[in-house]
Amino acid sequence: MKRILILFTAVLFPLLACAQAQINTKKIKIADFQEKVTKVVLTGNDFYDLALCDEIASGWRLSPYEFCTVEEFNELKNNENYYFLITADSKFKKENEPGLTFLTLVKGGKGADQGISKMLEVISLPIASAADPSGREFTFMPAFIDIIQDYTEAAMNNDFNGYAGLGGNTENFRKDPNLQIMFAESDLSANIDRAFKDLNFDSDMSVIDVDDADSRMEAGTPDVVVSYVVAPDNPVAGSYCYKMLINPESHKLYYFRKHRISKKYGVGFLQEDILRINNQRGR
Image (tube, rainbow, N blue to C red; front, side):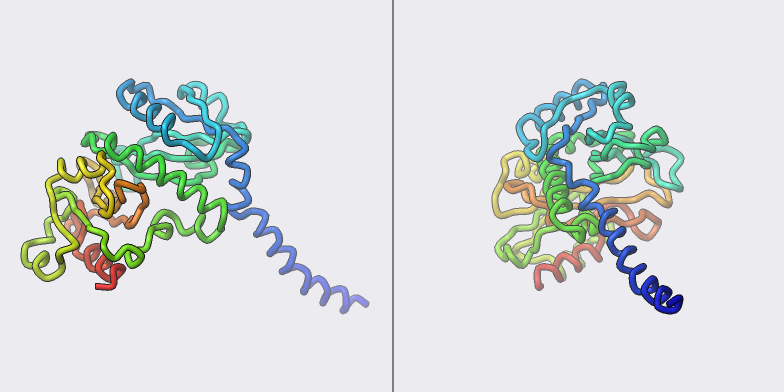
């Protein structure tokens, strides 16, 4: 009888463990997102807050929302009945000061007193340099709001989407064979020289002025994707550079990747990014 009990336990334990793992998945943890109020935390910067409020009012669709101050966030952050969309500067391990600003969606709950990093993160999207933002983040803000919602919706529907991150939730270039890829000249790293462009760029891939790129984003130009790069103003070894390609019309994210900045790899899209994009396009 004892041997039978041991065998039964050995068979049952993995099933119980599996059930427990399913209960704790990200999909389950954020299943209540659409039922809860999302508190949009204002920064105190009037210019930025006005832009954020306008875009939330016109583009937020997934859940009820309210605006709140940082003080109100600190009072409510332990409450599981709220999610919070917060703009925060982030410092990576080897950085002496925050290098990037992120737009982060988190869930309230226990442990929030230890910092945002201890809260349940739904998504964190880099949007600008912390020390010296370029201003492009205002042009791209409507797309950022949609990217955050698209990812959240995907994560609620499928655990793979939730754990794959933004890089695993991008659109397929091959579904849009006529898509024009437009890089702002300032978004390309120094190692993408004329010889590399001649070899790897084609009629559907071009380099344009940054103002032209932003104009296309602002106008919602169809059938193109536009580049956007986020990196610290004064990067150090250990800082990160984030690279994106975004459709101005649909605000869909077609490419999202980061690399660690070093002497070999500077800021901007690298040669390996172009090769990867061409591979995704089937070129």
